[in-house]
Image 1 (cartoon, one colour):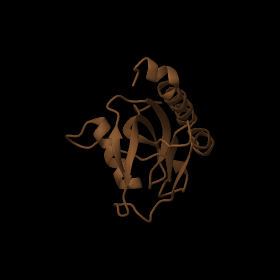
Image 2 (cartoon, helix red, strand yellow):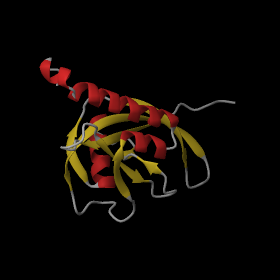
Image 3 (cartoon, rainbow, N blue to C red):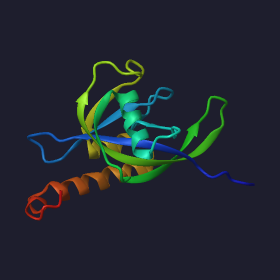
Length: 156
């Protein structure tokens, strides 16, 4: 049986730094169809680069604005259920987005829940194994780049 290549999507791993905590908090949103915990993601948009799509999805789905990384943090795969019952393979390229502003009004307000949690809690809530790993990788990189050695060595 022939297998189609995975469809590409782009996502934002939205995070914020807390003044009295060393570890970052990440933003999870619920999917509109099943209510699963996910990160904002969407399909490619004509004329937009991958990081710009991730940034746009973060605004539309979670009402956040901030600084998005041009380089991807990583990738994960999942099976997207379509309205006709079919499931398609998707490969999601994830970009980190440091949240600077949370808007009161945004396109998908009221259709999703959102919650700020630790990377460990986020990893326990999402279903996709590779996304769980990405939360752990992000936490490790964040700690490495934010620690005392990072400021001494100017690794920002």
